[in-house]
Amino acid sequence: MQNDPIPSITFPNGTEVPALGQGTWAMGEDAGHAKAEIESLTPDQVKAAAATLDPKALTWVVVGDLKQIEAPIRALGLGEVSIVDADGKPVAGAK
Image (cartoon, rainbow, N blue to C red):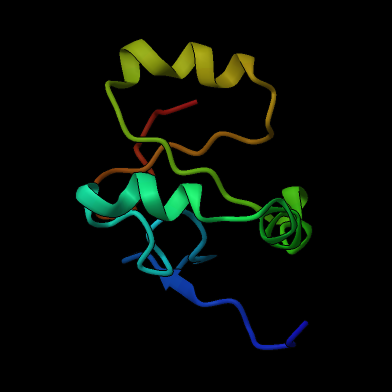
């Protein structure tokens, strides 16, 4: 396993998060090839990829209608919930 740093994304407010997820390695970006790309993965490749993830270090970014998704997201108990606008700035008065 390499010790290369994980690529990151910096939001407009300066917050930096790991760039993880489907698409960050050009897989699944072409809908016509996504199924074949996913099916070509071996169980060992999936296990190796999963072993590199630290769930405690992940940042979930959820986009949607706040009135509809806030309560269900909080109910998951994944940790602190921060509400930001499209520019990554905290929303005034948000819980």
